Length: 271
Image (cartoon, rainbow, N blue to C red; front, side, top):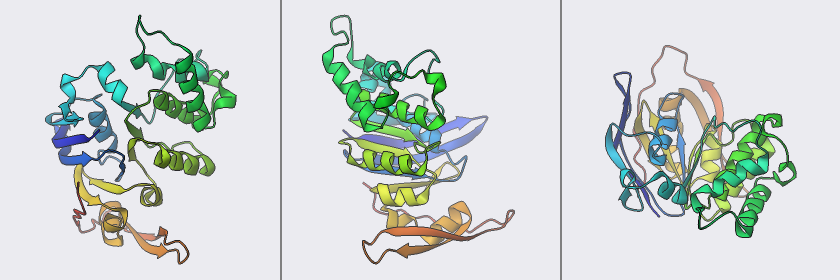
C-alpha cells in the first residue's frame, strides 16, 4: 500500500510551517525523516496520519484521499506512534496494547482469542511481555514508548508512522526497536534525530529544512558532509567500516551561532 503526499503544506500562526512536500512512500519501504528542531518533521507525520488537516495539497493512502476515509478505515491500515502520546494512568500495559485491536472490533466481532494472540505477540516483540500487568503510571519513559509501539503493532497496520521512536530509550532498546522495525513486514516512516540511525536503518532519507525538502534519496546520497553542514550547521566526516561497509557520521565541529551555512539541495533518487 502506497502513501503519497502531493503539494502538501500546513500553515500556523500566519506562516507556512510545511510547504511543497511531494512524496511517495513505496510498499515495504523504510523512510527516515530528519531535520533540525522546528523543521516540520512532526507536522509532516501528523498530516500523513490524517490527524492534522493540510492547508494545501493532499495525502493519499492506497490511492484514496485521506478525507474520504473514516478514522476506523485509516486505523486498520495505518498506525501512528506519537512523541508524547499519553494513556490513562489506571490502565495496565496489556490494557493499553489491547486498545490497538479497537479498529478491528465491532458488536458482531468482539475481542477474542485471535486478538489475544496478536496482543501477546506485540508485547513480546518490544520486550514488554513481563510488564503486561504493570500500571501505566509506574512505567519509565522508555517503557511507555515501547508500550505505545506494541499498541501500534497490535493494530496490524500496513503502514507504521513513528515520531522520534527512540526517545527515552537506552541504547540497547534503541537498536532493538529500529532493527525490529526494519524486520517487520510493513511500510515504515520514522522521524529520527540520530543521523547514524537514519543511515543504518532506512532505505531512503527525507531531509527537511524550514518546512521544505532539502534532500530525498538513499542515505549515502543525501547524508553528505555538505548537506549536513548546510542543514544542521555541523561539520562531519564519513567513516566507512572496512569490514562490512557500514557508514558512520562523526561530528568534528559546528558552525558558530549567528552564521548561516550556505544551503544545498539534494534530490537523490525519488520514487
